Image 1 (tube, rainbow, N blue to C red):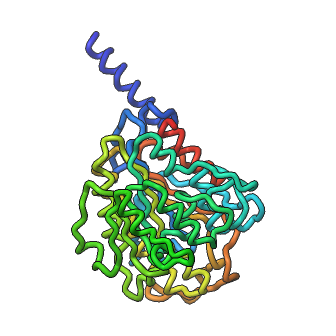
Image 2: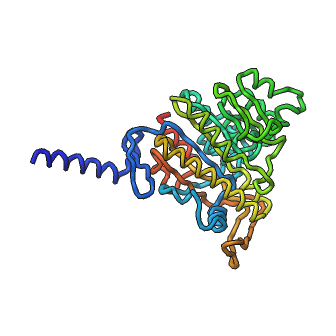
Image 3: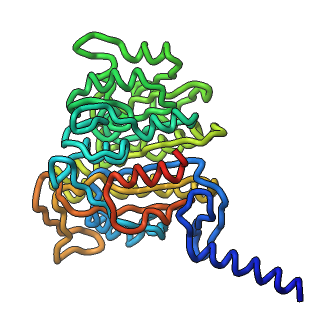
Length: 374
């Protein structure tokens, strides 16, 4: 009888813990894998924030249709919506949207890592470094573009690419992968930022040295790989580095016993929206989803990694119209700019339940910091 009472007590304790999916950092969190739940007793060790620039529900749906009604995004069970508006506009731009994620503040459109009065606001990447974590950025835009810049730079204007490159060169992020070589070595002020970064412990490689999957890199050094002279090509024109770059970054950053923070951006979903080009949107959406699949494979095996997937805004006012088939989207667009629609958030791993519901874009920053105990 005593044994039965003891076993029953354990059962109901675990049942209460599992069903409540507590939001407190050190209590049991639920990780859903197929039809099973795996309990963990710790906060996340690693955080991977994935941003599909311009990725609204229509962009996701179009990718789903053309990809035989299957996306890796369907593996997420914890889903929410964020309010994307910026400090000065109901329609945010990427700079203000990324700053909201990176620094937890609403700021004006065009601002990079600064408050509305242009004071530098500490980013998640900088917070992670302060706590001894490894850090990385992997993007299919230039590394000085608005979204990655908001995590590693502080500037009053997103278009100040050469100034942002100086901030990048002064930083100590462990992995940096994206385009924009010319902003580092063919500058108006004639600074050679590549040599500067090499002297600061970076192994610097570019597209001229070969494809990233064929390079041999020193695992003891920080990595800067510049994928294009300026903007990388669309995936439909041969760009194929986002998946192998993500795998390389995961292998490099996961060497740390303290954990890591990484931001990955599928940058050109947005560019397809600006161009009102449905095929461009879909190809970039599917490429980004392939990266999501690789990240989820890592997180499921690791069991200590929080993955958050979202977008800064929707682009194009993209609609999927009557006449769409499994082979071809019949698109409609209401704009060549962004829209004000709410944006989906997908979360997996320890603490992922906290990302359910409707909240401000700045709350993504706050939720990550709370779960990490920062």
